[in-house]
Structure formats: C-alpha cells, structure tokens
Length: 80
Image 1: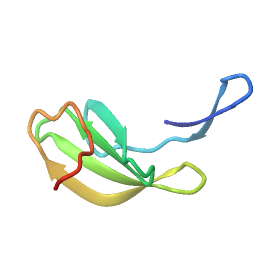
Image 2 (image 1 turned 90 degrees about the horizontal axis):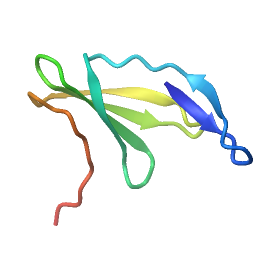
Image 3 (image 1 turned 45 degrees about the vertical axis):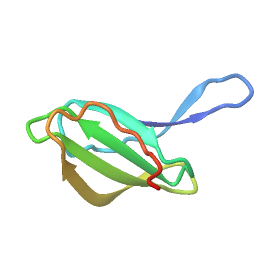
C-alpha cells in the first residue's frame, strides 16, 4: 500500500495498492534519490523486485526481478 502523509497532522491517506509478485514481502527500501524502491520477498526463490517511484508518489513495476534465496532485507549502497 502507498500512502500520502498529511504534513499538518501526520494522518495517512491511501493513494495506491501495488501488487507485489512474490510471497511474504519483508524488506522495502527507497533509493537515495527517491526515484526507485526495492521489495524483497522471503519466498521459494527469494524474489527481489524493483519499482519506479512516480512524481505523485505511486509505484510502477520496472519488471526487474532477481532471485536471492532467503532475501529478507533490501538496501542500496555505493560501489566505488
């Protein structure tokens, strides 16, 4: 689920349900620039899925899916 946060009172407003093509979603993280999100799923093949974050905050699947068995945590890091 994607929510909008009211900056005045902290209340949430639902703006989107986004299907995740995996079971037992565990880790969710945003890229440092806020333009992408990764979801890791703790299922049979450890699906790690990628989404583009649109200007209005909604998520669009990129179609990228990587298998990382036992994936339960997701993060972005810098490679030198």
